[in-house]
Length: 117
Image (cartoon, rainbow, N blue to C red; front, side, top):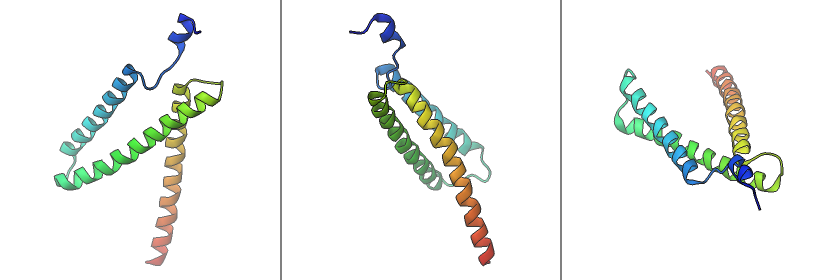
C-alpha cells in the first residue's frame, strides 16, 4: 500500500491531467504552424501546407507514442525512475540523436549528389 506522500511524488503519464497537457501541447504546436503559414513568404498553397504539416504531425505522433510506450515498459521493469523521467530521457535522446543522424545523412547525400553533377 502506498502512502499519501508516495502517491503525490509519483508521475503518471496517462491520467486526466497528463492527457490534458498532451492535447494542450499538440494544439500549441499546431497553432505555431498556422502562424508560420500566415507569415511565410512566398505562402504555399493550402494543400501543400496541409500535406507537409500532416507528414510532420504523423512522424511526431509516432515518436510520441513510441516514447510513451517505452517509458511505461521501462519504468515498470526497472526500479530506477518514473515513467515521466524515462519519457524525458527517451525524448531527449530521440531529438539529439535524430538531429545528428539527419545532419549526417544530409551531408552524405549532398556530397554524393554534388559529386555526380
